[in-house]
Image (cartoon, rainbow, N blue to C red; front, top):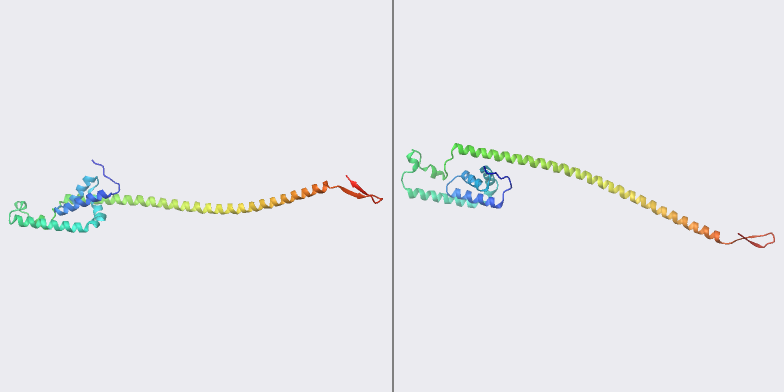
Length: 211
């Protein structure tokens, strides 16, 4: 059994889907048959092809669809006028010969309808699983964003506190430098005072140097 693709649709996939579906419309076939053919060609389920056609691709080919339907009507008209009153194969079974031409599409059997509905159900279930997965991932991303926001706010507070501490330490450092500078100048002055000679006057009025 061929693997069923689950990856995103490519422009080439959409082109094949559109070309095959339009061809089936022109030839009076069913869209279900077109989706099955496309699914076999690109490795997807017919339900996935039908979902893609109705939800996305069909909107881009409205004019081409109308032209295909007109070509189908002309084709059916030529079949009618060309065959005249000749008996159709369906007449041999006692069925209306115009059954195929009136609608322009082959009648669907119940088995085909059931298969198609089951395919749609499977496609819907796959879509719901993908939605739940995306919702879970979105919730996880939201939680990560909240955590990052909380960490960012904490970092901002830490940076603000660090800046405040830096300013305080810087002011204390400047004050300490000033104190040390004053102390150094006082020490120099005291050393200079000690280096200067000192004198005192004796009883006779003479100056005497003090060592």
